[in-house]
Image (cartoon, rainbow, N blue to C red):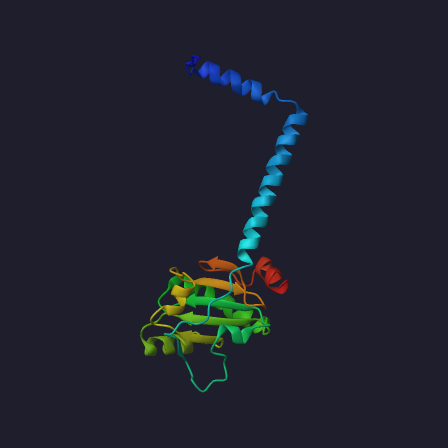
Length: 190
């Protein structure tokens, strides 16, 4: 039982490639159909995976800006609402880049709960930033980054879209244009 070894040559490889390219149209269509079904199967698996991740609650280190404010203190308190959970900090240039469109989204879609979690260490710097940039959405300061760790966030800005049932539907990494029609349509569909 001997094994024949075939020497590789570019002529031999080119010949095989020509044979493969001469497959019948029917074979090519069958291959394309199999590839398409495989892609759909992968996409269905990825979609199922997204549907099973409940949003973690806020971490222990969260400092609410105004303890007297009637804002909920737990993600679960927002059940029934679509939530954008945005991680940022005041010295983050990409965070500053996306802030105007995030504020515009907040004003144009008031039913959308936007929660901004800052990792600023210094309370005074954080407060000055909020005043200087007219930030009027719900924001908390989490200098220990405990909430960011729960969400496995290590880049800023990062934003999580949480559906009405408290399930994470999408993660946005980097600055977004929250006024784009694609994002608005997606948010409206939830």
